[in-house]
Image (cartoon, rainbow, N blue to C red; front, side, top):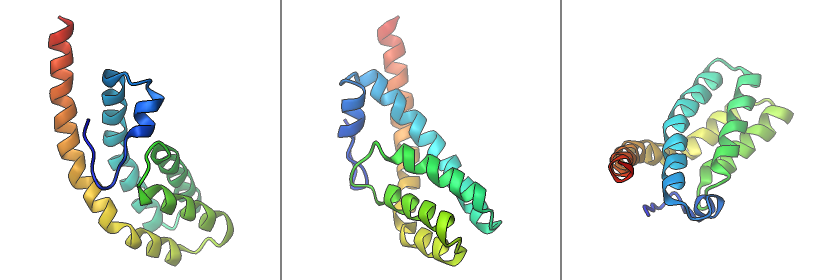
Length: 129
């Protein structure tokens, strides 16, 4: 199983009951959609769209809840609180800058993981045939 400094996959492994094929497919789905959702969040922040910020941050917070050792989910929770109470976009921009390094690391890992999962899918298909 692959690990990185950003993620600890034990929650996903437990959630899938140790079914590696299911775990890998869930990880692939997570990774491919998280990049899209991060782009949507940046756009919502740029547009000062409170409802869109709340919606995307909630989705990302829920998605990252299955991962431990990942600051992104904590920041998404803080963004949700901010959008519900203060509605202070400067603070949200500060929070996003605070995890910018994590997001950049995540983005660089996305390509690596997607390549890994594509190869794994090929192996699973060959094994099933």
